[in-house]
Image (cartoon, rainbow, N blue to C red; front, side):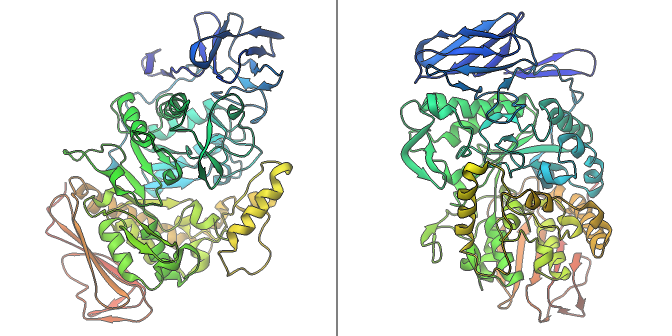
Length: 610
C-alpha cells in the first residue's frame, strides 16, 4: 500500500510498507529478516553498541523491535556462525555492498509533485541515461541540473540504467545485489527522490531499469541463508533465481515488493525489466504475470508503464485488454528494428547482425509488425525464435538507433556516429523518431556524440580476471578489432565513457541537436496525438527495390503515415516526394528521385489537430 500523508498543502510523504527490512514504529524500529536456513539470528546496531537476539517466527522469519533505534544508525544481522551480513532489503548501503545497512526514514523526504499523474504511454519519448556517466559528477544531484536541457530537447521521459547497489565504484548497474538500495556512489535515497520530484515538476516521467534475472557476483549474502538460487535451471550468470522450486514463494514476494517499492516509495513512472527471457520459471503461473498484475493492482491509479527486454520475441506478454489498455506489459524493446537497420546502414554482418545481413525485408516486417522474427529459424542463432506480433499496435514496441548495449557491447564502445557518415545517422534518427513505435534516445546521441560508452565494472580484484576473461570470450564473436580492447576494470575506461558536454557544440553537434529538436517537435504535433486508438494489424510493408522500403501504418484517427526509405547510396526513381501530404524529407530528393540514404514521410487523410 502506498501511504501518502499530507504534511502541508504541497508536501507529501511516501512509504512502501513491506514485510522485508525495517519499519519505523511510533517508538523505535522493527527489523525483519527471512532466513529459513538459520535457527538463530541476532541484530547488531553499531551506533548503540548493541547485539540483541531476534525472535524466531514460523516459515523462516526472524524479527525484533528496538526502541532506541533511529534513522541514520547502521546495523547488520549476525548469523549462527558469527558472520555479519547486511540487510537484503536495505534502503541504503553507505559503505557499499559488504558494509552495514543504514536505517532510512522513507517519510523524511517531502514531495512536491502532488498533481503529477504521469503521462499516457503514447506520449512517451524516452531518453536513456547512466547516472555515473551522464554528468562529470555522476550523481543524482548533478543530473537534476540537466533536466531543463532535456525539456528543451523535447523528450518526455528519462530512463535510468539500474541503480540497485552494486560492488565497487563504477558499474553499468547489472551487477546489483541490494535491490532496494540506490547505489551510494550516485548519492543518497533522498537525492534520487529529489531527482524524480524535480523531473515530475518539469513534466518528465522517470523510468527505472530493474534486473530480476540474476544477482551480481559479489555481495549477495541472501543466498547463504535462503533458497534464493536454484540449480534446477541455468542462466548466463550461473544458477537461476528460485522462482519455481521449494521456498520460491517468498523469493517471488521479495522481487514483487521491490518493484512496488520503486514505483510507490520513489514514485517512478515505469520499469524496464532486463532480459526477461533469462528468468526461469516453469511453475503454474509465471512470475512475470504475477509481477505485472501485482504492480497494476498496487499503484495509485496514475499512469504506470511496464516495458520488457525479451530476446525470445514473446509477443504474448504485450497482449492488451479488450479496451486497449495494457493487461500486463505495455511494450518490449525491439532489437529486431535496431538490428535490421544497423545491418542495412552500417553494412556490418557479424555478431548478432548476421541473421539480418542483406534482409531489408526484415526491416520492413519489424517496422510494420514490431518483430522481424516471429517463429522462423535463425541460422546464426541456431534456433527458431519469436511469436506472431502483427496483432499488436506499433506502440507495443520501443525503437532506437543506439542504447547502452549496442554501444557498450562493442569492443571499443563505438557510437553510431563513429560508424557511419552523418547523413546516415540523421536518416536513422528520422526513421525511428517519426515512426509510430515509442522512440528512445541514448544519452549524447542527439548531438552525434563520439564519446564512447564502454563496458566497465569495479567488482574487486578477486573477480577482475574472471570479468576480463568473460569480456574477451564475448568479443571473440566480434572479429573486427583494431588495437587493444580497453580494460573493463580500469577507472580510465569508466572515465572515458563520461559524456563530453563541451563536445555538443563542436562539428556536427549543433546540426544534429537542431534536427532532433525539430523531429521531436514534429512527432509531438503530428504523430503523437494520432497514436491513441491504434490497433493491431495496422502496419504493412513492401520492397520497392532490393534496398528501398515502403512502410505504411493506419493511425488511431484513420489517417495513414507512410515511410519510403532508400537504404542505399544509389538514387531511386519514380517516387512522388512533394505534395500536400508531405511530412518530412530526410536527405535529398529532386523531382521524382529519392537520393541515396534518404527517407520521406507522408501523412494522408488526417483531420486538423487543435
